[in-house]
Length: 244
Ligand SMILES: N[C@@H](CCC(=O)N[C@@H](CS)C(=O)NCC(=O)O)C(=O)O
Image 1 (tube, rainbow, N blue to C red):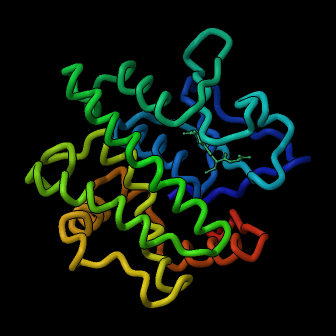
Image 2: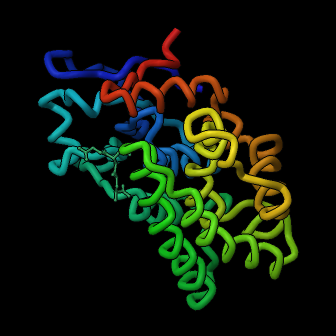
């Protein structure tokens, strides 16, 4: 688990050994940045993490991404060490450049179909973002969206969307599911990610948490999640709840 503090305005840019490893600009609770952590770790690619306080961004962060968003990845192995950003574009870049443990299907149609599922998830991601920002539950609408994913996993008949091991669809949507751990505490008992409605997805989520090395490396305890979201809903997000 990467527990380093989040850099803010006025902080000096951190320095790293000149080892050619990628530098990932991240925020510990950002699900988009989590996608990049999972892809890097699933491929055993070494990297350095620079966590950013998104409420008080350091000036130098805008060199990494002029849009001021995480994730951004600096490619230290390329001339002039360029930055790339947008989580799904970073995933595709990494999968092409580092062919070990391929995450996208090689067949063009199968690849597009996985990308369609990832695209379908984006409206669910937006609803999660809204409800954990304004405090108004959208859990019913989210569950309606998740029904399709439950049905698709059932249709595939495998533990993961990727089959016996996770693929890009698994890693691209997993980062939103830890939020379900904080649902009941923040939105009340009626809000639960239930075995009754989502037997396959619940098993999928648990199996990734317990068995997948990349997810295990990234995951954090429920309490940290609840604490972060409470601070965010109170208008003062504490990005450093995991810093010891
Ligand atoms: N489409 C982008 C979304 C990234 C994004 O929205 N990141 C959020 C944190 S979860 C962010 O950096 N927000 C800061 C801001 O918008 O100022 C991606 O897939 O990488």
